Image (cartoon, rainbow, N blue to C red; front, side, top):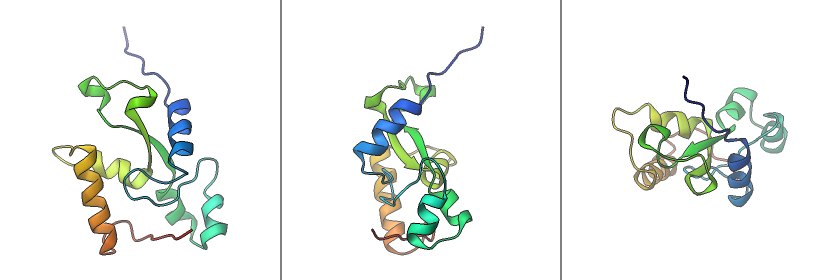
Length: 116
């Protein structure tokens, strides 16, 4: 029998609002319904905006027993979420957050620095 995962839609939405629409890792604004939310607001192109799509991120991964409830889910942009999990050894959320912010401060992350 297949293992079914609980939907992240509600926890992701709650995290998005609690984080004021900003990525947990890079602190950049994200969008939830359409990339045009950021395209028109910040004058970026759609491919850049797609990187900033809001995703639900497990702080403790599902494979390590992490739950899909509000306490374990944060809102992260697609770029940060995917890059954390592409690493051979997935870093802790705290270490990854520090790493991302250091890279972002040197303009060596996703190349998008939006100020609102």
